[in-house]
Amino acid sequence: MSEAAELLETRINELRAAVRRAIAAGDRLAARQFRNELRTVETEWDEAVLGPDNTPIPDPNVPVREHVHRALTLLGAPSAPKLVMQVHTAFFSGDLAPARLTSLRRDEERSFRAAPFARPYYISAALTTDLLAPARGLLALSSWTLPHRMIGPLSLRVNLLTSAIRLAGHIRGQPDITPDGIRLMWRLANSIPGVTGTPDSIDPEDVKTAAQRELAVHEENDALQRQQAATRAAQQLDQPAQLFGTRLSLAASRKEMG
Image (tube, rainbow, N blue to C red; front, side, top):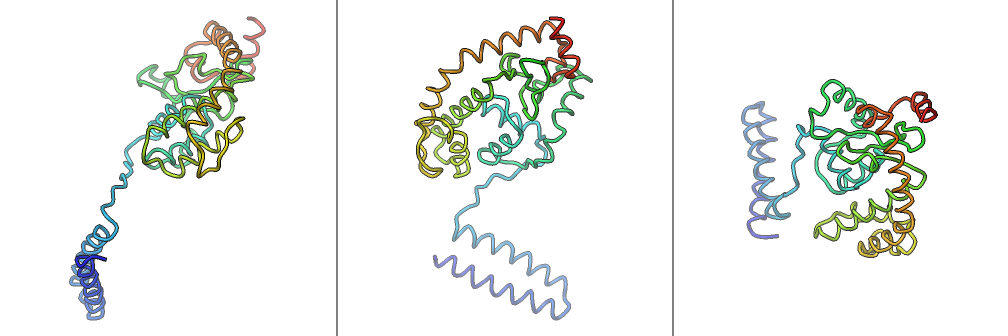
């Protein structure tokens, strides 16, 4: 420990003793003054020994929808709230509690219906290719194309591969990725044939290569199914329903009519 740090530590001990004496004497004003000085010196000691604290301070004014938008943009595909939370925790700063995601999509739909397109984007639904209904437990972005927001038989696998590729690329381009980010990529890539390594040794380039190889097998068929469903949705659904889905019974009857 440096000489400056040792002097600060001595001063900390002196101030702690001063606080105790002031409290014992019933001098609350002096105790507060000593305590304030103690906090300042403790901060100086932390910086002298541990270095400056560069941890970003969470902004409580950032809406939850913006946190979700960042995570979905990184993933590049409709995703479950749990994965959105994991991406936010691993790669971004700010407070995002799981409970805040519960009613988000419903709130976004209410906002859109009250003032359509008043915002540059909305947290919307992914739609099933068969019923054009909201895909359970998936969040999407209104700025994505309608085919992008469709979910068919192959789409969950395609989306996982897409997100694994995007996370691998993001990690390769960032020199200070946290262990949480590496472990998250490993969890996504663990089921991809050809990916090896542990959560601590996995290679982002290997993940990207293996995911692209499997994606080439499914992508064309999945894209065709999505496009066909998107064409049907554009013909049968109004704009709010294209973004947030429609009731199952209504969607089914429209499918039969189509």
